[in-house]
Image 1 (tube, helix red, strand yellow):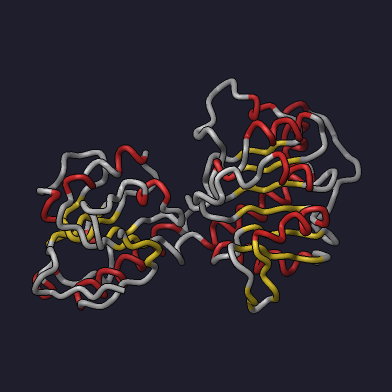
Image 2 (spheres, one colour):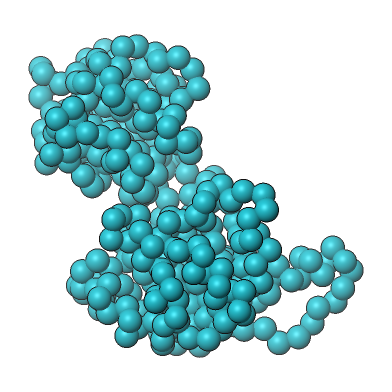
Length: 325
């Protein structure tokens, strides 16, 4: 990892919020840092060429937040406030940004995203959308509904969010929780399988929860072959990124009534009016709100304070997921 020499590092730090609202930030006068506030909506606060540390504004379109990057010729580090970094990574160019470290928001979104993964799972299994519709129509929709208890769950993408999902599954008396990641390893809770084991694991899962980042290898990971291996009546939950799932392939399975889905992310996104996913049978949709909760801002501020304290002290940064070569 890179160390940041205070004598040579660029002093400008672009923040999407006022520095006075972030407890623990290095003092500007003592550290030599210059805080510039840019929320993505206003004019650039200074010459982008002087920026050394760029904190990407949260939940804005990629074309907005990547706009200053071509002019950030002195950049040393980019800190996202999202778990995924795919849109920013694609905008960092070798040669132009060689050596720039890209850091994600590990530690910020795990709790909120895992909460939503569990909420979507329970809501879909227990028929909550139908109850809401019944309430609106004053209909008493009693009956028997599936429980999460005694179900087998497969978590695809066992990083910090996947582990947080399993933490929240623990009290629900699942029959089994299997874990899949890019490469096999052993976690505190047991074996983590490689993606190559998915064909053997999918037929045994009642619920498949997607937590994987969007990469070249995970784009359309959930294709017709993946879905065809899922058992009849299984539930697919996606809290990762929309393009991890082949939308057309999923539509065929839910239209046939063979699978159900609970999606916090879609492809395309936002889902346009008239898209068949809106009214597909057995599909529950939330509008990409996995990390957008009251837990976000305090955790994001703590992350920024830690990272910029390290930057000011010349220490290697945490959460580095990519270095531009």
